[in-house]
Image 1: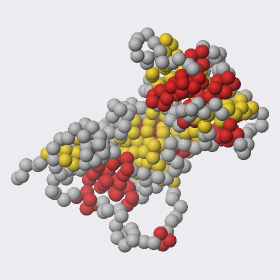
Image 2 (image 1 turned 120 degrees about the vertical axis):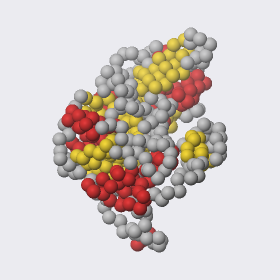
Image 3 (image 1 turned 180 degrees about the horizontal axis):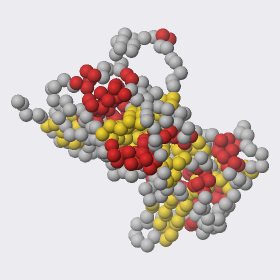
Image 4 (image 1 turned 45 degrees about the vertical axis):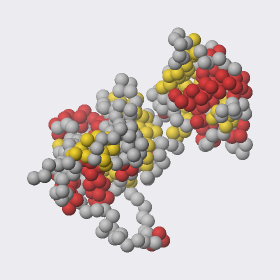
Length: 457
């Protein structure tokens, strides 16, 4: 019997090499190659059970786009509005969803609670990391008591496929994808080839039986999904569970969604009895803010289709060491560096010898440029030690020339500001033209960063 050959596979793009390389020639990632054993020549029994989903439906003959029939896609509505929003209006039948997050963040809890959210539908929970008894104990604690919730402690993909074809569940949960394996491959579970090929088999099964499949995935120390990046391209939806395990609130964020808007955000509170949705995220993020303190500004960000109000906190102090510190939590540190340079160049603030610490309260991460103005005002407020107007919400993107640029969905942002009882909104002048604002809300438009500083500080 021939000895299996050793190959090296890139975890980022799946490129295969016969020797280890420091840099991948395809995706140019460093230190991304892992050692594996070359695939066995044995035929894959699992692919005999699960035919390729592309064939047998439309055949190999190309179709005109006008000949393709489009029917309304059914969804499973859980009744949990925060979860349904993140999924694009409900769980799409025939979809493959990847759920990723840090250990202990609540992924298994959320997947187990699907049995309570969907009591009239059949759910098959496949556990590769726990025993059936452990999942049963968690289900009892979460109040999952339905005869349509099935448990299977298995990691062999062939056995999982056989169980799915036998039960025919509406929802399939694989916890986790890094533990399952195909026996026709000689590499270990969790390796690049095992994760990729196991996902391909489950994808074919999902499309063939029109079930909704959830894959629970691990994340690396850097916060990205463990395994090959091709895994994210294979699935229909990618959602991240974010938050601090030592705090009660969890954030469910959509990174990719073929059946809805990406970037949607859902807020949950972790309790002893499971996850509970938080309907008004803005009130939660602003519930503990201090009035009359310097270094604070309120911004309105849009996550997906949802405007939320968040507090930006900044602390500026003289540097104790030679190199000033620039620390940002919940905000891009490079963008913070840019805004500090604009404040120093355009507004004359000597921040080069100051330590700057920035924090987005509530544990949410803000990425859109519409919060730039709020970040700059919070830093300026702490630097001057002058409190900002607590009744004003700040919206706007800051350019390198110190100009305040227009942002999207200004009317929806203004409506959220007025809904939470704020008196005034500070926004770019170009956003005011042709926009309608709620009655009773004072709107102040600015063109330059200096005008915003004079208006709020």
